[in-house]
Length: 401
Image 1 (cartoon, rainbow, N blue to C red):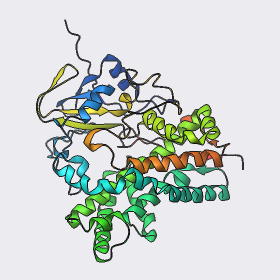
Image 2 (cartoon, rainbow, N blue to C red; image 1 turned 120 degrees about the vertical axis):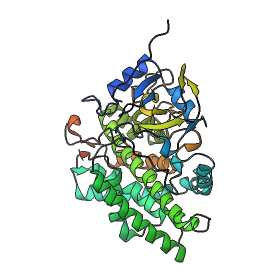
Image 3 (cartoon, rainbow, N blue to C red; image 1 turned 30 degrees about the horizontal axis):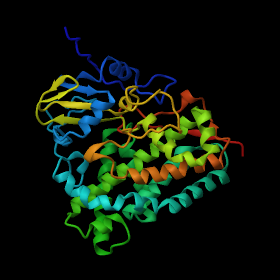
């Protein structure tokens, strides 16, 4: 007689006290029961939760599972009879082929490994400037404000062609949209403000192109509305995720002094360290896909129209794929992790994020070898689990001046 399928009745919204880097315990337990569980979405519609590495990876590569926004159920909220609209023009991560491919083809050449690595020296200078400012002001400081947020913000603003004078307000609006704990009204106000700004920016690029991605794209067949959507998507991908990786990654290194010391002793392992931190932290925790037809998955039939939640943070901690997965080891070969996704929707800006982290982490550790938390670890203010990207709101640190 087959064992009954495990059910996760509520998607957890908090992590265990004292274990901020680990997935919520309920998800870990779900994976121990098997790689797939039933999940009743808020409102009562039945769905599934995939927690095992092989299953999550297979769904990401399977065209029978859709990324279309209008087909998804919300993991945390009962949306009732509200009809979710299709993705906005340019919001191609929430589209299927061929619409997705049309946008991605236009952008892929602008984020190649070679092109992003050519930015290494500039990223190094931006990083050094902010470390200089930290050293000049002296301890203590909030590492999010002083280090984790401005470095990726400067880089994505430069790539998009946002004038320097506008970057402060641009970044504030982005933080309101992606922070995860602001009111729906504030988020909508910020979203509207950024849309209005991007409309002005696109018009300016059409009239007077400069050396940036938006200007390049004005030569394509994309409409102004599509260019605005692409700009907003690149902002989300290039700012929020890397900011939280830099902040939460530093928190993880400070919480594992032997790993901090290993990176300080050998900056050449920065490439491995970044991949391991991506695996270990999985700040982009979950994604959803909806079956376009009946699909067999993990011994279960996923009926057409059913939404599956993909748990990246449990997949990246799956002992079937990674040895001793709950241990942070920045010298391990963490290749194959799903921190940047997989398949046709794999993160377009992953090479930029890699270079930023490969430069920033060792530079921080070298400049401040005595860096440490300025509050007990359990008092670090974490983003809510309901935020699209997990991280810290602030990271108070100090060092021996």
